[in-house]
Length: 125
Image 1 (cartoon, rainbow, N blue to C red):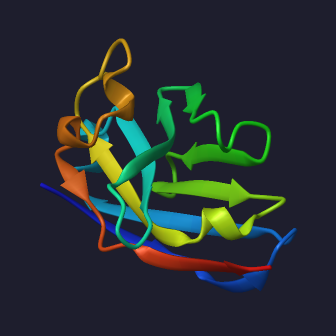
Image 2: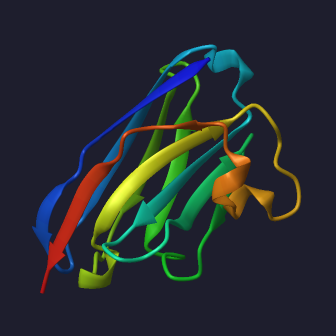
């Protein structure tokens, strides 16, 4: 089993930056793919970014603004978010899976076995 705890959310103005953290515990050595997803009110949970070994993937809506990284020694994944926009407002969830999630499976909610509780990010205009 793997437990994930997100932190770093908050309220900020458009154009600002925020870094989310996802601390993993348990069988962390089994994790191959980690991802960040978000869910705005009334909308489905959507893919934001993923890291599979050292390769990163991004949704088009955040490409060039967000950066995902992973510190294996600290068992922590990060999401650096720059140039934030009001449409980035959502609850952000960290996810992890012991599989490589080949192809575009890294972008699918149903493919991840482990999820955090989420952290709220609110961007005002």
